[in-house]
Length: 183
Image (tube, rainbow, N blue to C red; front, side):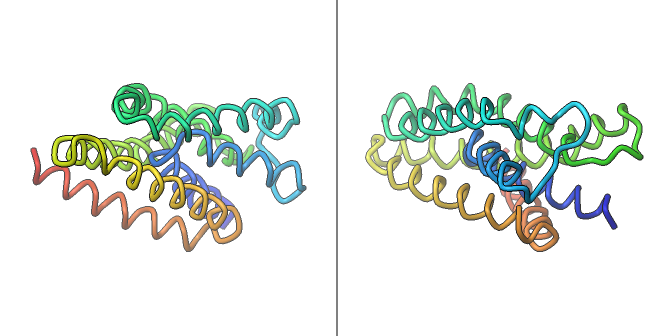
């Protein structure tokens, strides 16, 4: 059961990395600092005050950056690989010590990186469509919705991992099918 909960937590938070890279990392850090969660071996640094300051600063900069019409598309080009890396790290950090390190990273990449990447690609397509159809004037609305989704779903993932894990799988399947149709 611990593996299922860890994977569900990883999927939920990793999908949130597809909306904003650093919000799920900050929420997870705060949960760890509050004693709600303890990271696996080698990932204890993610639950420190130093990590809090880094994640909080990065979150603020990322959120502000998405409100600058031309800069948001530039951020998306960086955010796609970064979200996959963040999703991989988050999911791997939740997996317990009874799994081999190789299997942790493989699961982290496939489950966490995959869900983060698919959600990020969905947001990239949405933003590019908005830029093309509204000359970028609709992008702040999209950024606001993504910010809200990232914060709310990250918090829910920490407290209701199974529910949000299932929700994230459904979201990834929906976005994946939508992306395949566009290609």
